[in-house]
Length: 95
Image (cartoon, rainbow, N blue to C red; front, side, top):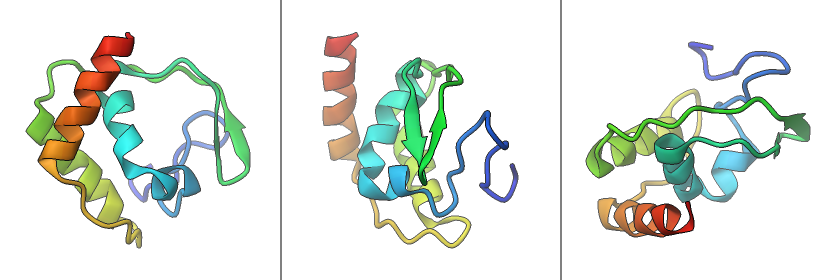
């Protein structure tokens, strides 16, 4: 897991993950609120619930996403704090 490859069949990879590359911002909601839905990453289905962390600040979540976007050979660009804040507000309204 330290190399971003996840845990076979249980935890999806972050390294070279199409799910992250397609929309890095959607990770903000998952980091904050968690996820109970099934997701497909690199053609593989994962249905393990992911616990959120409501204690993280918007700034910390932005930094985590930007780390993921550039770790393990990823090159998914940079997300802006303002965009993460706007998305997190929308996530919280849905919950």
